[in-house]
Image (cartoon, rainbow, N blue to C red):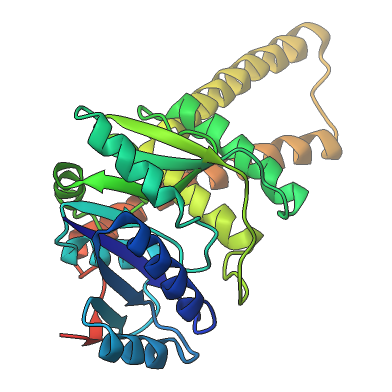
Length: 308
């Protein structure tokens, strides 16, 4: 049996040798053949040189090198596209995805014939900034309320999938990708292994609060039309409120001869409605932008160099 290991890399020259050594130790325990597929996502350090050396020493190590940084989602898609194993796993190279879990994941798939995927989820977020952990939990609560697919809190991209599930994922060739949502959308029977958070073994993460925030916005837009509904309902309520206020002002003027005056109150209403209109236009713009990128039919990634 061949297990394909898809590993996106961005400035990970220090982590790759440690990851490879640990994975080889796990491979010897499992007694299986690993097909490594490393994706160099436009790294600016020596990541590509390290991958070239690994490929020379081990013919089971393959790599793709993008012409620039296309993002982790593009790297995942490229790796899954080239994975040929009966089982396919997606892992982070920084060893925050414990390789030892692969042994238990494979056992579960072999013991349960109706199981298609074994995923992982963190039960703790030790080592993360509290503000990031808080917003991560809020994101999962929000997305599960407004989306048609359920995303389990704390889930990682790290999972072991059977070939039919991987083939189904590759049918979704959309340009705007959000893997956690795609994994859930395709369905298939999935079971999760829980583990405590693990710190990076080397290097620094490229994910900061702002990049994670933008990533969460992408997930909401890609898998829910709730923001559009909110914009519509908010606009409708604002119109109804403005219409009622207009009637009250007219009646007050006719009955009491007391025309409405006051610069502060006027500016407050104008700024409120103006701000809400800009917010609504922004929401519409995000969805239109997604449509624009899909219709351009640009490739999800561009390869500059590959091992074969």
